[in-house]
Length: 326
Image 1 (cartoon, rainbow, N blue to C red):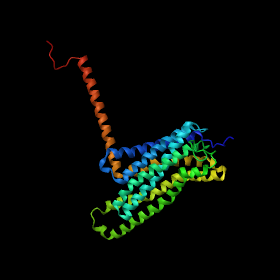
Image 2 (cartoon, rainbow, N blue to C red):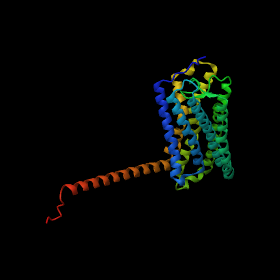
Image 3 (cartoon, rainbow, N blue to C red):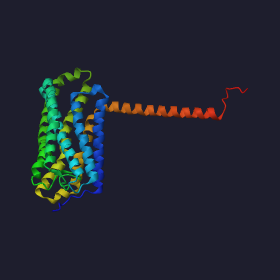
Image 4 (cartoon, rainbow, N blue to C red):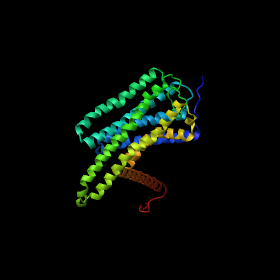
């Protein structure tokens, strides 16, 4: 029996492909800056690197799926669906793990507990998605889904009788948990920081660096607010289409909804890069400085090369005016 397919138009493929590329570059930049500058290797940024690895894998697998635009459960459809399932689920776990780590460090002030939990974060965030993905592939649950719960790529086969259960296990249940957990944890963190600011407010006038301190804390407050908001704004569209698919609603094929779903699922790596790299002043300044230094070096090499060429041309074409002929 043929499955009614949600068509993915060319302009949607272009937009989603650009989103995938931005996420790939953003995740790569996060990983690269962590490797280049050892003094910036704090534990939260280390956890962010692991999240970026998952987001990078997601971007690659989604890009292949969008460009391939599957129409059956071929071998590469299953492979792409397995990779995106593993990476996407791992991304949920690492996103929540970072929130838990920050909560323990900032609110509980327990450095030892936070450090010991990092081993657990690795065990859960890599092994649980892997076990779920292997089980789904082994039971032949990964396959063509007619783009009703995806945008061109493969996920849980729409023909599987228990596809609702496997959609929950391979992503949606963890997504719902993240929707609830992230706002609660970041609200608790913000409240704790605000109470600390109020307690210090009477001493700020006598602090010489009060203005710079206030600027840094305001920036941190803004990021803590944006983290759960951006996550929900990016992911909510896939959840909406998931619910519409279960209800059998034709709205699932709405073009704006399909595009938002595609961009939301693929832009997480780019969003993290914008927040934690481009909008973090020390790292942004280092990037600009490194880029300027690279450009200067390239210009110097170019000028040196041109100078050598000019010198060789002069020596082979005309005698030097400072040499007397015999």
